[in-house]
Structures are given as C-alpha cells and as structure tokens.
Image (cartoon, rainbow, N blue to C red):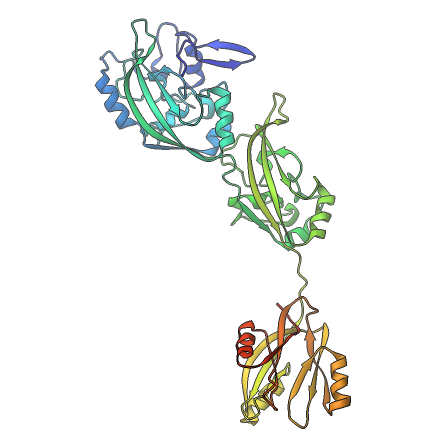
Length: 483
C-alpha cells in the first residue's frame, strides 16, 4: 500500500512524487485536470459544498460498485505505464479520482457501463464520480488486488499480462483524510469485496488447432503461411489471410480463408481493439529446429500427419518500436495438428451372399453376379456390401471346389497353386484387391466341423470372436480392405 505522498511512477528515468500538486499530472493523464487552486468541474465532477458523511460513503460504495467487473484483453494490452490504468490499484489516491478516463477503477463503477472510455485517458473523457455529491479532498481509496503482491505501475501490468485470463478477488477500501488533508489509512470508512476478471492476451488462441492437408499442400514459401512460426513479427499481423497462425484464433472458425492469402480476406485481430506497434509474437513449433519458410514447409510435409506442441510468445516493443524478446509479456502452450495429404484411392464394393442350403458365403465385386444369384436362385440371400476394396493393389484370388461347391479367397498365389494342383480346385482368377497391409483387416475363419461352407471372411472382430467361441478356427488376417 502506498499513500499519495509516497506513490511513485517512472517516466523518462525520473521519479515523480504524487503530492497534492503533483497528483494533477496523474489526473490529467486520466482525463482529469487539476490546478493548485482547485480541481476542474470537467474532470472531478462538480465540487460539492455539502458534507459527505461516512454513511454516504458506505451506502454509495455498496450501490455504485459492481460485484464483478470484466476487463477486456484490449484494455489490458493497450494500457501504458506511466498512465492512469493502474492508478488506485494497490495504492492510495483521492477518492474523487476513482472514475478517471482510462483507469481500471473507472470500470468498477456501474455508471461505466454506458460511459465513454479511452485507453490511457487520451480522449480525456469526463470522470465518473464514485458517489453522487462527493466532497473533494475528504476521502482516499485503494483497490487491493489479491494475488498481485502489492505490485503497481509497470510491475502490475507485467504481472496481469503474464497471468493471462484470471479472476481476482479485490477489496475496495475508502479512508478518511487527516487534519492535514492526507490519507489516514488507520481510518477505514468503508470497504467492499468485489471480483475483477481480466481477459488474457492469448484468450483468442485455441488450445488445439487442426491444419488440413490441403492448406499445407497448397502453401508457398513466398506466401504468408509460415509467417510468425519460429520467427518474430508484429502481433497485429497474427490473423492475416493464408497464415497458419490465423487458424490458431477462435475467430477463424467461421472466417474466410484463401491459400497464400490470394483473396486478401480481412485480417483477424488477435485482440479486438489492439493498438498497433506495441507487441510482437512468434509461435515456436517444437520438433522443427527453428525452421522457417521453405525449409519449414518441406519439414512439415515430410513429417506427414503429426501433432506438434507449440508455444505462443508475445513480446513488448522497445522504445524504438522493435521487438524486445527479453520482455515476454504473455505465453500460451498449444497443440497444432497437421494432417497428411491423403491420396484418393479408387474403390469398389465387395458384396456378400449366403447360401442357406450349403452354409457357404460368396464374395463378389460383380453387382450382376450378386443380383442374378439372389433373384434366380432361392438358396442365395444377399447380405449387401461386406467391405470396400481398392481397384488396384495386391491380388486376392478366388478358387472353387467343384466337389463341395465351396469358394476360397486368398492373397497367396502359392496357396492357389497348391489347391489347384493337389486337390482339384479350380482357379477363378483375381476376385478383387487388397489395400497393401495398410487398410482395415479382413479376417478368415475355418469351420473344422463343416464339409461345406468351411471358410468365412469378415471385417468384424465381434463376428470373428463369436464364431471362434462357437468352434471356428481363426486363420488371422487374410488381406486388407479400404479404411
């Protein structure tokens, strides 16, 4: 806690003491004007001749202060020190200054809901009185913000920004003035417990973002896609059209996108109302060794589908307007999921039929064969599509046993040749194709108790396990269907 005579701010390397006269500098920067003789009506409200009692203060405090106040990310991001934003927070200043333009404490007042606001009080909007008819010079106040260790000025701004989105418990205390007109912090006139919710500078950034294969495939190194990834650029550029970082914003979900920003869609601000030139950012993508531009694109494409841990870092600008990477204002850990470009595989349906007389199952890609058997032979029942097979890939052969009427399906040409040469089976050539050991397994089972319909194919592990329990023997994965 600091009194008005010890409250300090730093400007141009000089220390400014807030005495009765110097306080005018703070009020002026807050949109409040003051001179040694009196406070102007524009900034402090009309000076009241009536006496303001402790009861008035207590009642006014309860009636005029919100129970919960939300501070926007832009208001926090745009605040400057020195400046009015933190005045009265963890420090004691005159009560009549409570509602100055650009002050955090102004936002605590119910009357602020429809009142004008300017960052850092640049517009010098009229002050809002904390209570009606307040007598000047008689009371002081402070807002103790829990969890901030009494920080003030730039230290407080740094802490609030680093903490990100957070709800703070706060105590508003009003003190009486002593006989010399200074705050007597031993005389607490009124208090009120409130909550102050601050939005973080990274609140608009998603925890997890999925970047489609097409966006990665179409990105060009000379374009914006990799801007801000493993490199520092202005924060206001975060949501540019065609940028990977645009996709990290919650606001991108329903926003327009064009590859390489060719459509010049409007940029999405990372913070609504953010002032330009105050902040810079980078997104450090783990596992990419700091690669940028074409090198980064090549690496991401070579890695295929991969989930990357990433750190969004926001830096303050230095006095020359360049990024000061030693001043990390805020960070956020996120995940960026990049998907591999999938080649479209031409497929065909494999139909399954069941012969209720023999117990055999037949598998065919021919809709003509399927329809003919079901419509002309009452023994066959259609069981619709069993799976989808690629039109190219490993051959799956069909062989026929003329003695039993059974069909067998195998990827093994050795098995086909053995059955044809030794057991009198007839080869019926290639029935369909397999997805080269990378699709969905198709299982083959054998019924040792059946002379007919001894083999069965299914993609269903449930069907496989049920048949095994019923006495069938699993023969493992026969081949693969398309996922």
